[in-house]
Image 1 (tube, rainbow, N blue to C red):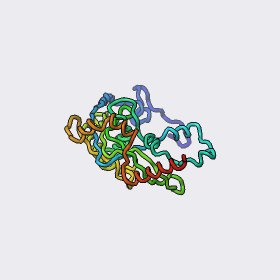
Image 2: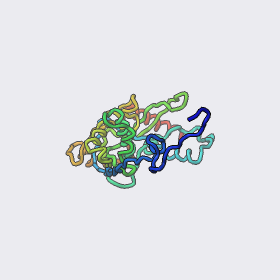
Image 3: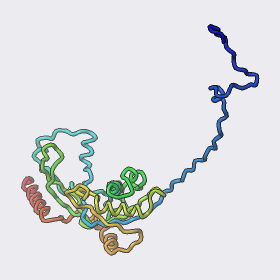
Image 4: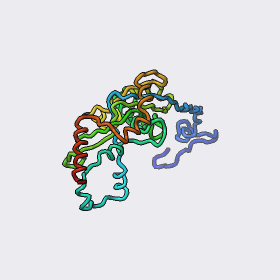
Length: 279
């Protein structure tokens, strides 16, 4: 090409292809075919087992009273002058209000099954191979309550309120020195097995417990339990079912025994004070 001549020889397309190495040739090169793999999904199944728990330490029931629920629903009101001079507590009414009452079935008392599931999920934090979040998803507890065997007693304790000043108060609760319940547990297979469920429930009985002032809270040690497999023979379970069912519980709710000497002393003072004010 002469100096200053800007003409050039274009590539020849007579062959119907671009010269080797040009961008268009690279882009038009045939791409290798890939085989699409089929996705395989393992179906989940739901397994079921029934286990029995027997208390190794007593259990407190502490249901929210109907009066408190009504105040939350409709709002509170100022007490009248006559109400302000009344005795602050009614131990017998508070004792009955704290119990989980069942309308029918072999027992008059019930145990909230969500409390058992919560205990198992908390125990998962200390159980290798499973997490709390996965346990929450993989366990199912049908229903709201399961029959709770055991004869209730009335117990009064001095507690601290949840206000800023931690004001002391006397709380009356349903207290069962001996207790037991049968739990139906459903779980997802293959992530969990019967063995894994039993292990979680055993750990929950040791580390967490159920009911008020339970082992999980640190200071208390109530509500701990041991586990029996479905069909396992146990003399304590047989006694609970035979002698501490609905009939014994209904009688105790009407005329309860006092759980300890402090409760008996407080109830004696309360009865005398009621009589004095009524005179």
